[in-house]
Length: 319
Image (cartoon, rainbow, N blue to C red; front, side, top):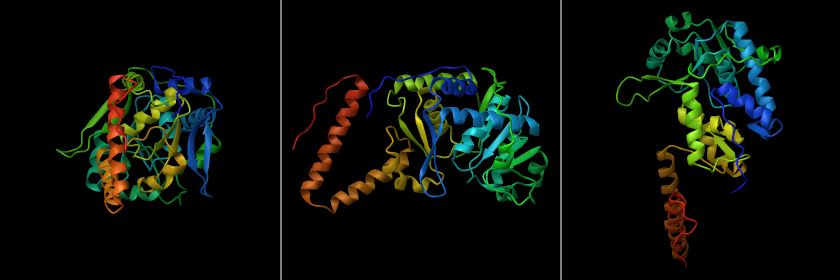
């Protein structure tokens, strides 16, 4: 793992964080996405910033105003983050919606968050919305090409002619994000966070976990409706990390060798299944391999404990 000095930047708004990063390291890679030919393609911080500027311009032109709430219901992608940053620069609040959310709860969530505009991954997602929810929407943008029958506009077509002039109307104490709870103990609840709160949380995360550094590779594979994944993406902006977007979470293991992330985040269940799979393979192997695995795991635990306590040494086991 690289031990380069971190190049953190700070700001009181999320658009301000991106603008500072683009000024600080304009040519460094920011976002990585798979191209049609299956190769990873990078966008620089300046490219990310310019795309967010165009997104803000087109959203203003469509009628988005400061204080409005805009929903984003799409798989993880650079366009998700660009649309989010553009909306935040307008002064709007972004509401992430899981593409796998139950249809019965979608209308209630849109109503609870008072969403008046929507970005979807594909226009067919609109068929899941009841008429009352559709009627409240001033406009809908699809990240994928559209047929025109739904009334949705195509993201790429809009972005082609959008102005790149940067204007941010975000304010530190205005709401930036609305995140819904899982609803495992009842109906989902909407929780709002201000720009200042999110930026302070990024500062605290980076202070506590120095693993995210300038140039660190990070995998964005959890749903971006999830605050956990979005916070890591914001931390990447603050520190200058490189984000690799994996749209389908089921593909993450296939892409991990190429991404080779310095930091990898996941929910506990993922690690439990991953560990169980490794143990199952070790049990079917020779005894020496099982012993080597157990020693390696013990040493990893001791190293983690030592790092958390600030110690540079750990009592490691040997063969």
